[in-house]
Length: 40
Image (cartoon, rainbow, N blue to C red; front, side, top):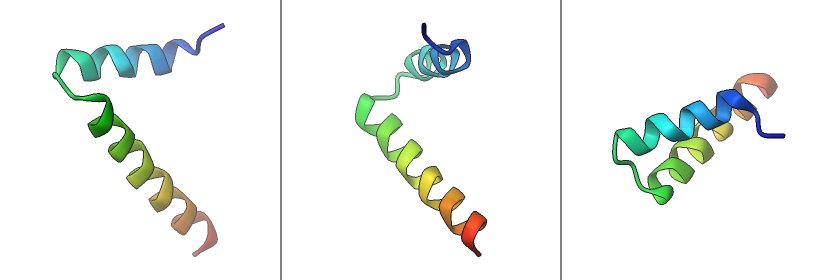
């Protein structure tokens, strides 16, 4: 089963005409920030 929140985020990104690569970069950048804030 798909997580509806993730589906909504991807649909919104498509409406904004973001590319898959832009979405990946955003997620990776924010994942790295999350790791830093949890360990810092």
